[in-house]
Image (cartoon, rainbow, N blue to C red):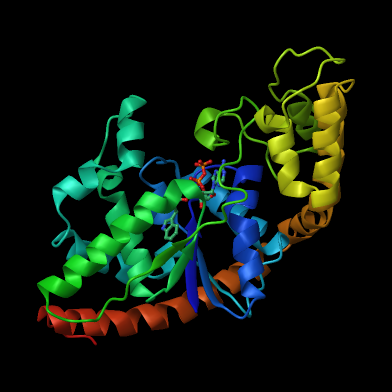
Length: 326
Ligand code: ADP
Ligand code: TRP
C-alpha cells in the first residue's frame, strides 16, 4: 500500500506531532508500506511569511523525522517545493472544487474565528492538500484526527475530477487514524498545538522541558482523595509513552487516592527523556551535518517528482491540456 503524509514547517515539533502523526508514520515504513512523507512548506505559507523562520522550521521538521527514525532509503522523504507540479495540479483541481466544500472547512472556519484575516491560500489549503495526496496516487494518509476532514475533502475532489473528465486517473485515498492516541492534550488541557502555545517541544532544552511538564494543568483534588484517571491531562500524555501495564498501575493509584499529581508529572518527565533520549542525541548529531540532510531531501525530491510527473502527464491528457514539454 502507498502511504503519504506531510507536516507543515510552521513551528517547532511537539509531543502531539510525535504521538499523533510522526510515530505511527515512521512505524508504517517498517510494515512493508511504500511511504512518501514530506515537509509541507507551501502549506506553511498560509500562516508564515518570514524566510528565515521558514528555513529554520523546514530544517527542524527534516531533522526531527530523521532523528526519530525515518529511513530515507525505504521512505521517500522530501520537501513539497521540490515538486512544483503539485501547484499545477492544485489549479486543475481548483476548477472542479465547489466553493461550498471549502467554506465548510473546520480549519478555515477556526482560523477565521480566531481573528485571522483569511487569504486565498488559507481558503484553498485543502485543494493543495488534495493535490499532494492525489499526485502520488496514495492509498492511505496516516494523520492525526484533526486532519480527517481534509482527507474527506480530498475524496470529494478526487471524485469530482474523475467525474468531470470521465476518467479514472486519480485514485481515492483513505484516512488512517490511530484511535488510541487521537488527540493529545497540551499543558493547558486543550489540544496540543503550536497555535495555542501549550506544547511540549520534542527537541527543546531539558530543563525547560521538565519545567513545562511539571506545569501541566490538573484539577485541585487533594493528594489523599481518589482521582478520575480519565480526566487527567498528565495521564493522557503518559498513555502515549508508557507501557500498558504501567498505565494500569497508575489508573489504580488514581482511583485509590493518596497520590499527588506531582508524582505522575515527574514520571512523565523521566519517561519523556527515556523514550526520546536516543532521538534527541541523533538530532544533535544531525545538526552538525546539514549537507547530509540536504542530500537526503534532494534525493527524496527527485524520487517524488518522478512519480508526480507521471501522474501529471495522465492528468493533462485527461484534461486536453497540451504543453511543449512532457
Ligand atoms: P499544530 O496543531 O501544532 O499546528 P500541525 O497541524 O502542524 O500541528 O500537525 C501536524 C501533524 O501532527 C498532523 O498530522 C496532526 O494531526 C498531528 N497533530 C498535531 N497536534 C496533535 C495533537 N495534539 N494530537 C494528535 N495529533 C496531533
Ligand atoms: N494539513 C496537514 C497538517 O496541517 C499537513 C499536510 C499538507 C498533509 N499536505 C498533506 C497531511 C497531505 C497529509 C497529506 O498537518
